[in-house]
Length: 76
Image 1 (cartoon, helix red, strand yellow):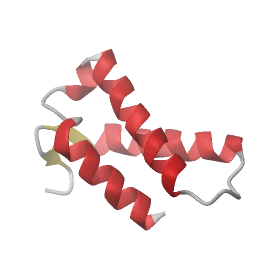
Image 2: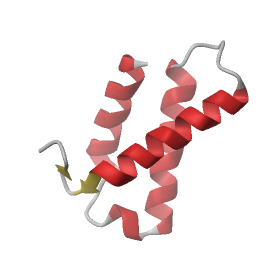
Image 3: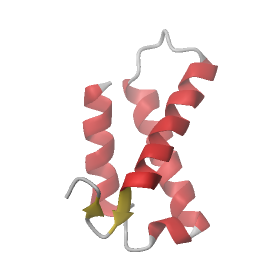
Image 4: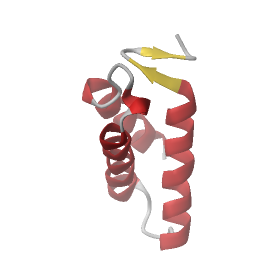
């Protein structure tokens, strides 16, 4: 899971978490898609589809609440 999280954050910061990304539906959908792809590639196959969707939603909520775009986050 740590590998997936690191790769995902690098990918998002490289082009998806742009200025005001939370205001545009298309950009929010792009972030969710990137999360789903990263977790699909890196999570063990033992995750059920329901658990996979739950993990994707938790990751999206965390990103949405903590990464404001344009390189800003609560971690800076």
